[in-house]
Length: 371
Image 1 (cartoon, rainbow, N blue to C red):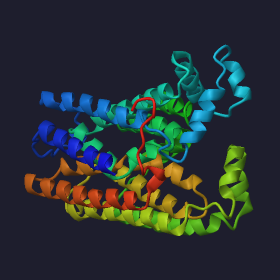
Image 2 (cartoon, rainbow, N blue to C red):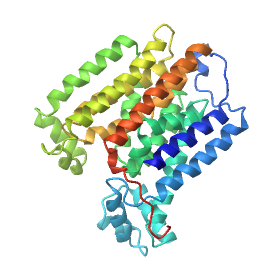
Image 3 (spheres, rainbow, N blue to C red):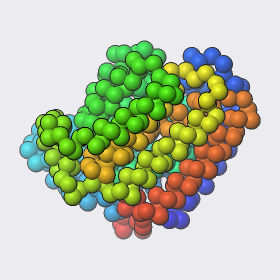
């Protein structure tokens, strides 16, 4: 617990050091700025990558999937890359990551350090592309539980920031880059393709607050239909037979976890709405908010099948972007109020996740060989 409090304190310190005061942006096309006049911004970003990579990479039996990754690493045949596909059912990119890590060292800690670096570095690059304060975006990323998620769903945590970069390219109409990045992300987790399809669909819809509200209730209604329709379930299982395990009736995420996710997402969106309702938002921000609301619907579906929670992980990375890009459109006073209020709620969210023992991240342990 103390370590996780330390992460908040250090990240907050870097946010203060690297904070760049910006003027209100009236041009919707300038929302995604990527301009860093403060050199401390870049230094803070580098140090945060080192910090989070160290904490994630040195973990020992932290996260529900830790044992599975260790066992997979130890099964890797270093003499023949292709032979590993007969033993393990992972995407090619992740299999390559396991293989390279095993070539570098026979100890699993190598894999965790390398994979953690890819997660944290990719996340930082994604937020540098889409926000004016990457350290502040990382603080939101931490508070809303995405760091905890990376300690468990490592494959998807590598793919998620790549899909966010793809989403950013889509906003700039770089279609071929978008396709290439989604394809690259799918090499680590095939569900990135579903995220890419959702990004394209949402990109070509004109969004407003009324349509976003309608979207949410439509997803809730769809959730009641999925598990009464064998056709829908069979189609999802057809896409990947591994998903059959997730549709067992006794394998839901649980009502408490499901509604915690729904209420958390709706609270976050409501805070943004409170400040943004009287200003004209560009479609890129509406699009991000619509995807976040869709994620709330997937949280609801996760009470039946946790596979849906995994889909939301891609959308959840948009939380810092939606908040910070909205803040950049406000006057100075309201901008500070939005940031303070969302950070306060994020802190509550962070401690609630720790209290719930999210993804078995407590207690934090370090490899015995290092101590």
